[in-house]
Image 1: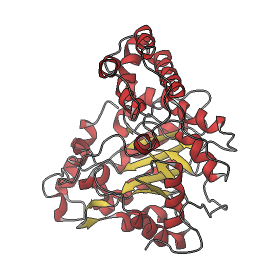
Image 2: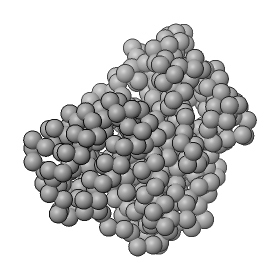
Image 3: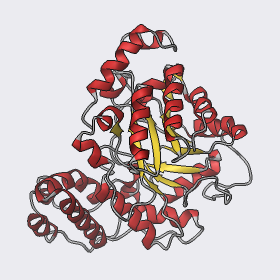
Amino acid sequence: MVRSDSAAPGEWNNPDMPLPFSPPVVLAPMAGITNRAFRRLCRDSARRSGAMGVGMYVSEMVTSRALVERSEESLDLVTFGPEESPRAVQLYGVAPGTVAAAVRLLVDEERADHIDLNFGCPVPKVTRKGGGSALPWKRDLFRGIVHAAMEAADGRVPVSVKMRKGIDSDHLTYLEAGRAAAEEGVAWVALHGRTADQMYAGTADWESIARLKEELDPLGTPVLGNGDIWTAQDALRMVAMTGADGVVVGRGCLGRPWLFGQLAAAFEHRPIPGDPRLDEVLATLRRHAQLLVDDHGEDKGCRDIRKHMAWYLKGFSVRQQVRQSLAMVTSLAELDALLAQIDTDQDFNVEVGSGPRGRTSGNRPASLPDGWLDTCDIDVETEALIARAEISVSGG
């Protein structure tokens, strides 16, 4: 049940935070988004806000099989900039042995300071193979993966778990899975308050975060809440209402990397910086593009920045022709010419710009392997599926 104690909505009342970093804010791993360039923008915004700490910024998800095979793409995903600390990697896998091998690689080669296990991805190509948010339904398999990861890490780096409520409202797994992860000794459990079939639709169920916090409190395992954090005030309301030890922010920072400066200020009880005017937004967009180009070359970097244009410009008045051209930009010179055509004398539209962004689709049955829901136990079919799933996601 959502708490109704002395912590009023919008007030953080947990100064004795049991997390190994501060502020208690984690950038959620997002495929194709949370690369080195974006992580640097978010971290820098926290630093500029005067924060005592900068939080944690997790890499894009990397598959355990591809990492063990040392694919070039996967090794690049777990390569961090010199300014990144702690270095957090999110690892996906469906076989305990393969996950353990990937953890050992990351730890033995000193590639990570923290490992987060993905049990929350709701994307059909993942769940139809029994991975992501479908996997905790197989309770022994879930525990086996967490146990293998913890054993491979051997206390050298902390391991955490990120998950969803379950597959759908009739097949909830978060309490049992959270308990199992806590009993295996994970550093924390992060819960997105949606089921797999919801994807990103509707409203996140913060009450489930409160319920998980109550469940894990006796075990001393911190709980982080995820879902519908669009502003710093949303983050404060979530921890006040649920008792969560921190927050994980995903779609809310798309086109708004400065949100992390606002979050840092909010959790440190400092005045929250206002949202930037358009000239500052465009300067951030331009720096984002430059960082991508520096990392990947002009062709790939400019292709990568295209997806961010609509997020950065949300709520601002920009001619349709310019918007369309920005979505097809091919060089930094072309980007500069297009940005110069925009009237930058515009305030941030708080009502529009601080609202939901990114994917909002969902509310359809989760894609699952045939017979997946027939049993929570591992059977012959599950074992065969695991072998195929590990191979199918090879490549990073």
